[in-house]
Image (cartoon, rainbow, N blue to C red; front, side, top):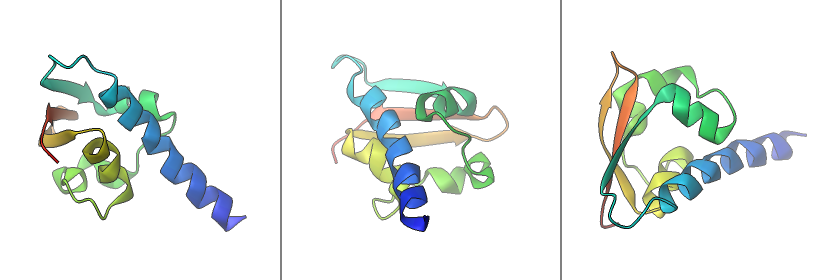
Length: 91
């Protein structure tokens, strides 16, 4: 069932959006490791997530819409440390 697989893939990033949206209003930034993000979404991230370009704030990309919709921007992805920095932004 190809449609169900695509739906599940898109839904997993909703968990990341929910986590970011639930951060206290006074929290303006947060750093998460790729492992922590995988724990939040309940699945392994694709191999391309190890590259900073995967973390662009591009609303046309399913995974980026998760943090953008929650009101956050990725401001840095430190590939060697596998850490992503999110900052609350105006989107």
